[in-house]
Image 1 (cartoon, rainbow, N blue to C red):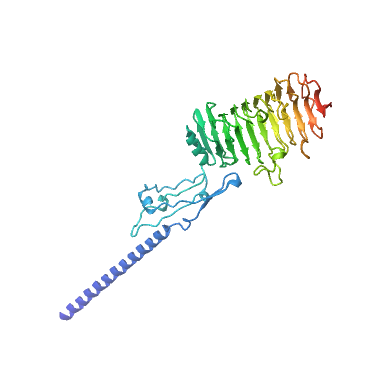
Image 2 (cartoon, one colour):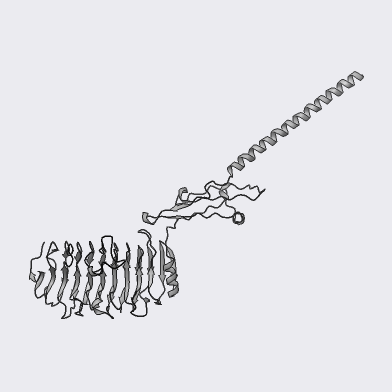
Length: 434
């Protein structure tokens, strides 16, 4: 009996020991599996190694690329933000390569059960839709121009906007220009014939639409700009020229505008539109390109009415090239008899296309409808004139060439009441060319 009791006791003790050892091994296994799971979880939630990188936003115009730092939200901001759904996020239109992803360290001891997609990402890529900005005061207009970004659309409420002259120095892009627009009852003025324009544009890719400009020395001056468009404007009552494109500006446009009653202070300088600079001013700072000339090229002037101007309707200077003047009306222009103002159009540039313009209601001091002149070697050449009509009696030619060079005047130009004929070369009638 005693031996049996010891044997049974040893047997029971062995079973108990083996049972405890099995439980310990099972517990160790469970703890190991839990540790491995936590490690995997933590590796999946490590902060993004690219959080400190910058994102580069490239506009459609390659010259306008800019680097924009990606902002990193603070841990407190992330904690306060509502948690996102764990459902997969649809890709954005810009693709994953345009978004600057950010990560933030967890607070000490914090364990999050949310998936990584719950963290908000920040993208500073440029919006594809325009940014509307409404202004109703001169101060607001100044602020809007100073802060303008590509794609902005600044809308003026009706009213008078008076200032010392606004400067548009920012640049849009060819696909996202900066637009300033308003009704004709939105009127820009400097309040007098000061030595400044109401609006000077030195940036590129601007659109100025619909507004009126008056009571300034000049309405608009475009300097060293590319791709600026002026359309549907009403320019009136300015001291000198209405609109000026100069200082190597490229591909500018004046379209569907009314320019009238210019030259109120200096009639001899009261051109409707002035393109380029005279040779006498090429040496002035900021006026010329790298070769010392003002190559304001590729200007388009179309669909405008120039009315009651003491000087030429369009003065297209030497140094300019490859412009277009078409479908404009010149009504009672060049009547001051000052500063050689005796034609509707004075063309001294090269390779211009001058077509389908109407000249009418001319004063006695008016001499020729259109004058093409070589005032600087290499210019006043290669121009094509077609489909223009000069109405009413004039003492000279419909189109006069000084001299003819290789300029081409087609036979669909009309000047039925030009005393000396349709086309002249240094005062002698010449034939048109088909």
